[in-house]
Amino acid sequence: MKDLNVLQMEQNIVRYGDLKPCKTAFIDAHTPGSDQKENFTIIGGGVSESPDQHVHIADKIGFNIGAAGQPPKCRNSLHSHRTAEVFFVLKGRWRFFWGRWGDAGEVTLEEGDIINIPTGIFRGFENIGTDYGMIMAVLGGDDAGGGVLWAPQVIQDAADHGLVLAETGRLYDTKKGEALPDGVNPMPLLTDDELKAFPEPTTAQVVPHYVARYLDLMALADRAPAKVIGAEAKLRDRPGFEVDCITRGSLSEAYTCDLPEVLMPMRGHWRLEWDGGEALLNPGDTCNVPVGLKRSLTPSMTGEASLYRIRTTDDPAGPTMELT
Image 1: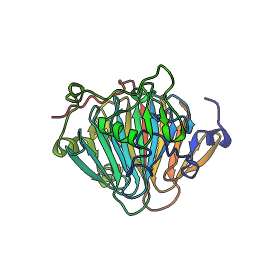
Image 2: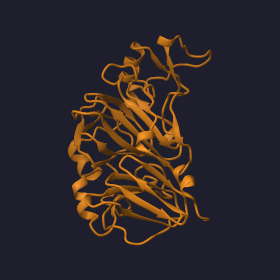
Image 3: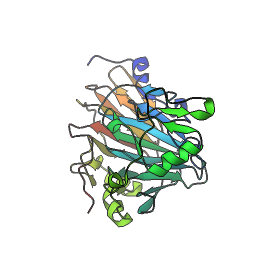
């Protein structure tokens, strides 16, 4: 690959301060308790149901990067995905819960913690901290599994507050005078038989195999990148991408990668250098590194430094782990 100048690389970097939120991304955007959340689509098309969603980088790299920002006590309603959904907490304290009614199990995540939510279960999350919080997301596949499946009560509650989801996956706001087009039906509710296929795992089944704590990863990544999600990682899974945790001292030499790679700093300021220039990456920034570009990563200051690195793999875009 030929050298890239700084301006060219900046087009591959989405700065935290430049993130453009959508407040009407999903069907629960008017539902009390969920109506203050902000959704961000950073790389890829994402799964937003709103035409107002801004996409920062539209490249198809085998997975999607997004984020959710929520004030305290704001909740994301129960939904399911057909492909992987991985979160790490950038800011705040968050409760993740799951099950048909959200009461099968739960776990609290602190800053830096990461969760690989099992495919095919209803899940939701809420900010239980005292300030505005942010979680960063990785969704498997270029089309993220074709969208979101909502628990029936979410669709019913949304209709009471003016939002109707069409069978096409697009939202219509009746408070704005919008209506479903002729010949387009509302999204059908999942039937009782369909709902029986959604597992109800306990906390004890999920947490040991699907949650990695930040402090544990920092210890594991003392001298080499810690494998967080992957075939031979702490969370053994093959969802179509792999996740590593990199800290100060994890990387000592420049390297190249023949597959798409995304860098997402968690703590500290990281200097990304390549043939042609350098850029500083800060917590909350997202960098889509061009395939084949020789690059090096070093913390630019003393103190705590960590980042998550996500790479495409040739595995199918869905977890292979099974609940036991």
